[in-house]
Image (cartoon, rainbow, N blue to C red; front, side, top):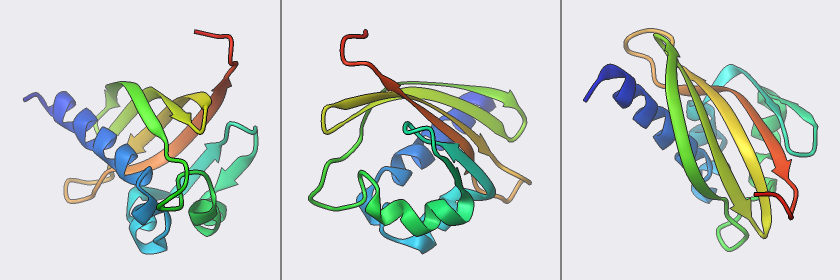
Length: 128
């Protein structure tokens, strides 16, 4: 497996872990997957910082064991530079669809991949 393939695979695994309600309900687990410089532009257009997201994550969609969960599809990823992966994919949750883009970075050989930036764009119901 190439370094690029392995890095992309690890970033996708991190993305999927962040969709897990057990991770979303645990600041400790979420903190391990989010870069301290994290920023998100959500599907609502709201800008989220690292601290805001950690505080709100358990109450957002996908945060409850029995509630709606994100169903991801069509993952693609590319290694932009050593330690920087760009992912794109789509999600469906409770009938709502969104296109998503994330940057994952790994700072140093012993570091883990962490989400640095995330953006969600709603897909209109009549769109492909």
